[in-house]
Length: 239
Image (cartoon, rainbow, N blue to C red; front, side):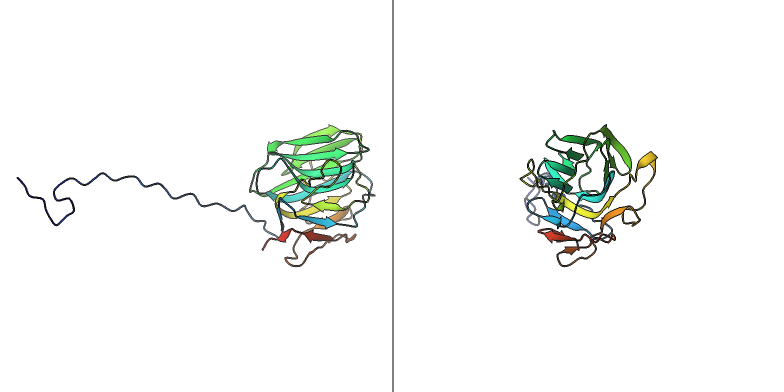
């Protein structure tokens, strides 16, 4: 008989087979960050409020946002202007971008994007509407256009980023994500398939431009000539 070798555990007996070890969990990849200033919304109780916004301009109204949505949600508002039953809202409806219009208590008109939301990625979303037509764009591509009979004016209520507030949205429809820039204009910047200027460009049609480059404090400056500044309420600066 061959004696066990005391120099190695188990002597001459064969070593047990290697047991595969579980792989370590994949590290969580944080959402992409904008290349300029930005504001972060927590999806629970945060917004930027523009208190002195008055929707008294001629239509069309063009709203453009640079945004990074952080997670799935039933509804999430990026920009809104509601006065009870009247107004408009641009944001998320499950996994699609959504423009909602309402006027005089008529049923909501809701336009949904064809392209799905890309969670955690920067996107440029825009809407244009007047009393005849509404359209929704994602990264410059037309998603849907629809006939409308509403100017969807929000009256004297504040303009809100990150939240909606009105008769049908009294729970807030808070947004979970990062907002890099907002521009509001009195012209259809996507007419005839044209490429609009960079979102942080000012011109004579700009009604509001919020670039969120302050990085501190609670004031979000409107760099347009109208200077309708906003105020952070629960939202935080992206550092």
